[in-house]
Amino acid sequence: MFKRKKKAENSLEGLTVPQHVAIILDGNGRWAKKRGLPRNLGHAQGFATVEKTVFHAADLGIKYLTVYGFSTENWKRPEEEVTGLMNLFRKYMKRLLKTALENDARVLMIGERSRFPQDIIDGINELEEKTKQNSRITFTIAINYGGRDEITRAVNKLIAEAKDGSLTGDVTEEVISKHLDTKLIPDPDLVIRTSGEQRLSNYLIWQSAYAELYFTDVLWPDFSKDDLIEAVRYYSSRDRRFGGLSKK
Ligand code: IPE
Ligand code: IPE
Ligand code: MG
Image (cartoon, protein in one colour):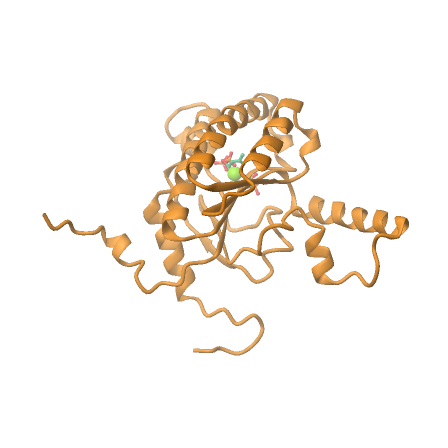
């Protein structure tokens, strides 16, 4: 029997799909509060949404998906919430290895990882190593990530290389990009933030210089495939000039 496609799926036709989508997943706490639940249940639901979103992104032909899981500023939160988040990472990482291997997804982590417990660091290294040949989608998780921290670490790496003689020539934008945590992935084309906040909160501040920005009131745990398609549709309608003139 003839099956009608859902409206949002139909509307993907003719759209320009961004190569790299970066998401500031926000609103887990408010999602839980609205339901009278503890914040960490909102985070658990948020992780489930991340898992689904990787598949949705791959289905839509997005080659790079990067999500903001924990910022350098999130350590300010109550210890109970931070510990809860670490435990969720642990559980999620184990599932992620299996699903990434089954679905040809490469997994990368950006951020300063030395502050995490050793078993989490080992888990991250294993994920990166075992998925490095996968190519359907590159899924990057930013944890203990801050754009300023990343740039500061890059500057210190450059100073060390200048001292030991391995840095030859001038420091160009390209050289800086190659010293950032994101050296293996292109700059984001589209940055999505959920929950109605309209700020970058220290996310990919160097890399987002020319990204299109999309804000939605949807709280992260409720973010669906249709919401992602809506963001792609918005992206597709933009005229990206990069400082030049319109080609349209
Ligand atoms: C985003 O949800 C996830 C993290 C920052 C870890 P929040 O926890 O910031 O949720 P709200 O903003 O309090 O609703
Ligand atoms: C940004 O969200 C960090 C992550 C999504 C991991 P926050 O909820 O921490 O940001 P602010 O404090 O509202 O700017
Ligand atoms: Mg928040």
